[in-house]
Image 1 (cartoon, rainbow, N blue to C red):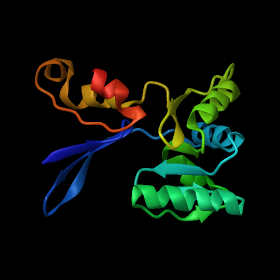
Image 2 (image 1 turned 180 degrees about the vertical axis):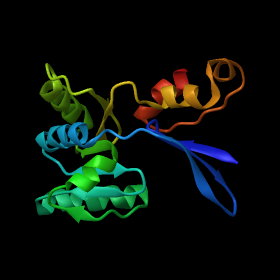
Image 3 (image 1 turned 90 degrees about the horizontal axis):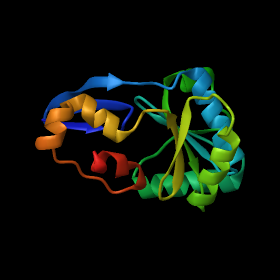
Image 4 (image 1 turned 180 degrees about the horizontal axis):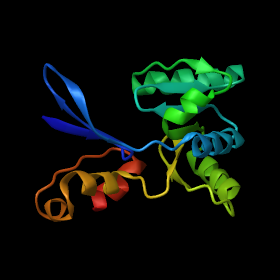
Length: 170
């Protein structure tokens, strides 16, 4: 068996068996709605990452093309809507703001969040910005999965992106 996690959720995976959910922390509809507004303020398309699906949010051809490029890079396909409904937002675990310049988008997202009590943090990645619940990251999830003592003595972790830094440092 192996454990797959993204910070907000974790599941065990094994050959010939369905995944088993270990934990799942949703943003909640209100916080997900705030995250989506911040993502849209960054100017690009948004991707609402839910427990079992991802939904792209785009209103222009440029944003739809941005989502298509993101899907091609990630090897996935997500339906695209003009606005995310309450059902999608209530299931969200994080919201991505797609950006040609993630550093500039992260700065803009932080500026929008500055002074708000949203419970959200901004994580800059390679081709997008993640809006996640404060305290939700891969390091916290790894500690939750294996415990602090095991993490310090007998854990191997792999990462390939900016959002893996906390986990690798743990």
